Length: 149
Ligand SMILES: [Cu+2]
Image: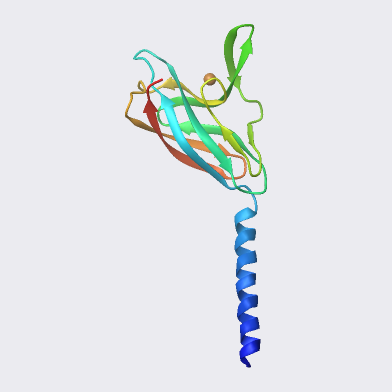
């Protein structure tokens, strides 16, 4: 094989590798979660809330359809809304969309993960485990640090 031909072949293989790698990264839903934290709860509280930033680096949208934790009996995806001047909340119908290439921030006063029937109060400095469930990406386990309000 001549030097020129082998160089062409190497260049072709490199290019093929790059194309394949970038396809793999972009296909489907690619979910990452960061900055997960929970709000500390008073001693007698039955419920708590946690927040997280969810990013989808894939090329298909995904949905956060539920969550589970051993820190609470029931875990729901909630949204906050105003009724008059009262802030209320309700479960997100049909799951929370995480658009392709997009970021959704769960934060106080907005979307949050509701922990209902806490097993024990959420104490500052401790950590709980919460698993987010996505329609396409499946289970995403999180370590959630409990912070001051
Ligand atoms: Cu809530």
